[in-house]
Length: 192
Image (tube, rainbow, N blue to C red; front, side):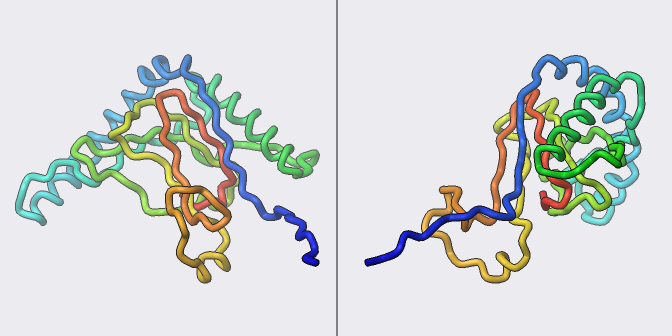
């Protein structure tokens, strides 16, 4: 007789998402100026790349990143929502926040290259607890977030999957296909 095996799930990594489309139009109007400034700041890099490769490649492979937008009055509503939601998430994850005050360490807007190829290498956000995205402009042709397995011990012993399209306990990466208005929160240690 075979004994029943009990399944216990530990060390899970939560990713939270919701949809807030009512902010998209106003945020795009506000953020377009910051993206335009970032594009202007990268013109020199584009010219240097074209000189290096001896051909016109435009902004292929680039990412336009704004200056810090922390505490600017025009972002007060979204920052309040993000702050309160981050507190709720950490609280629900079991953390005792009674002796802590949460604050922003980074807050910016970014846009990938018009010529394609825009990307980021997988990374984490150090000295933070919650990270996230609010998508303003995206389609089925734009890049999307990919989250990576955070446990190094699992990665060094990764076996082939039976079905790479199915999300299982063996899955190494998961991705989201956002639409404008999608907001995603996740622990800052999660490589993305």
